[in-house]
Amino acid sequence: MTEMLIETTDFAGLVVATPAGRLDLASYPSLRDGLLKHAANEPLGLVVRLGPDFEVASTAMYAVFSTVWMKISPWPDIPLVLLAESETHRHELDQSGVSRFVPTCTDLAAAIQVSQGPPPRRFRRVGLPNSPTAPLLARSAVREACALWHLPGLADDAVLVVSELVENAVRHAHSKSSLRIELRRDGLSLAVRDDAPEPATLVPALPLVPGHRGMELIDKICAAWGSTPSTDGGKIVWAVLSVRGGE
Image 1 (cartoon, rainbow, N blue to C red):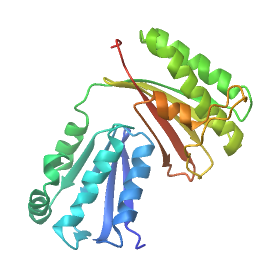
Image 2: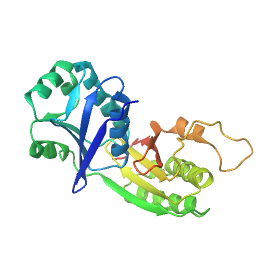
Image 3: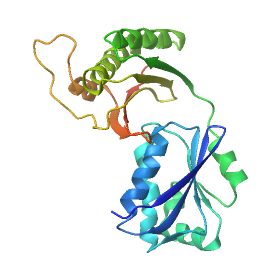
Image 4: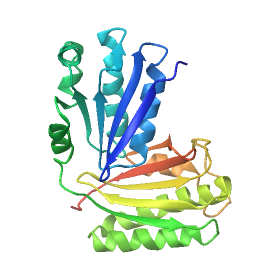
């Protein structure tokens, strides 16, 4: 796989990623996975700057940005904006059809404004120890958030999900972890970051083992879930529960 270099700049929580190189079939996975890793860090938004050092083998290659947009829509559901500085890039994006899905701007100020469009979402981040007490702390934080955000009907499912996510981190990653609880318009997302790079997989629940229901439980009660590599070499396992009768 050919590596696509991606330089990033942080603007008060908004990440501007500038890829450099030739986008073709060989470098497509590198650019896609690199952008997904930056999105997994949950910035306020992700602006992809297509500068003079970025070129494409064909307009079909621009589909990488539609792919990234679709993959991050369930989680972390952050704004993705393309900054096309040259007429050539803008023309090629129009030809590819990507602009119909991913907002495209001509200058950084406009891109930042577009990425800041959605209203702020409510979230909490909780650091968790590498300890059997971590699931208890996570469950307490989720119950408190559901009460504060008036989601009593979602609390029990959310507690079950976060228990599995954090217990897996303690059991398999053997590292400290962090929990992010976020309420969006359509769902409550729970994301646990740990230091183990191995992705979470769907494993059948273990009979007769209390509390170890496996990712099968998460797959059944969540609208979506997934495992995404983080830029620091670990991973983030996330799950989204639909808000029914809540806000």
